[in-house]
Amino acid sequence: MAPLTDPERLRHYRHAIRLWHVSGYVNFERRALEWVRQVLGVAARDFSRLICEHVDAGGEIDEVPETRPEYQEHEFHHDLRLTVGDRRIYVETRLLMERDIDDTTIQVVNVHDV
Picture 1 (tube, rainbow, N blue to C red):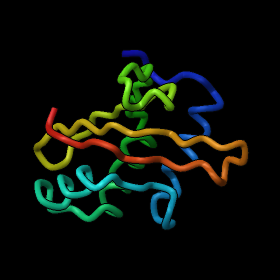
Picture 2 (picture 1 turned 180 degrees about the horizontal axis):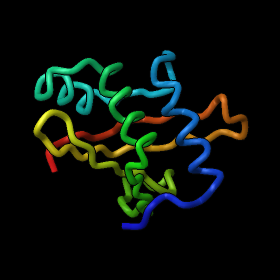
Picture 3 (picture 1 turned 30 degrees about the vertical axis):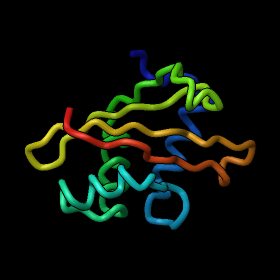
């Protein structure tokens, strides 16, 4: 896996995740949301803040070319590995980048233990 280094995608990712507290910028697919709530006992908003803190602290964002046929409309997905309590957590996200940076969002699609 390679880190996200494209300056434009990185700028959009950081911008969207820093708006974690504003509705609509960080969204969760159902299975990711259920895992965060049931396993970690954390609300989506709080988990979004943890992702933001991870990114702001210099935590790596891996950019992975999307090869799964069912997701071929996406060029990449972005993976993070962060610590929540004493757990190492894998987070798969998609950057839904728009021309206007204020319209860019992040979709959390999968969360589980590393």
